[in-house]
Amino acid sequence: MKPLLIEKSDFYPKVILDKENGIFLISGQSLGENVKEFYADIINWLDEYIKAPNPMTNIVFKIEYFNTASSKRILDIFEKLEEIIYNGKSVVIDWYYFDIDNDIYNAGKEYANIVNIPFNFISYE
Image 1 (tube, rainbow, N blue to C red):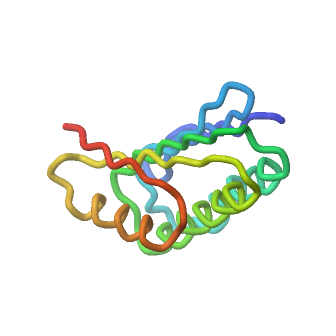
Image 2: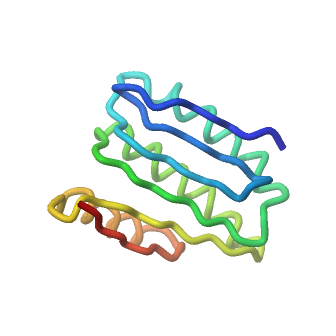
């Protein structure tokens, strides 16, 4: 399966989805106007990945800021990842947040309450 690599921009996060190397990362800001279009590639990649996922998928979310439209797309990603769990494989989300950023921390807690995926909350400076 070909990796999905998207470089970070001022409006969208860096994305690395690499099944072969077990690297799953979304990092940066997500505040663009065309989030549906941006996240479509991620959702499409995950649609293929969930057909034959790795035994363990550890995805790192290191989002510094996201707008309301992005929050729905992030939830879409988590719902796709839930399908992996329902099919008997493991998924863990490492949710990074600035140690002084309660908004991102709380957003992660809200997602953790919505989906049936284990979250690790990791603060950094």
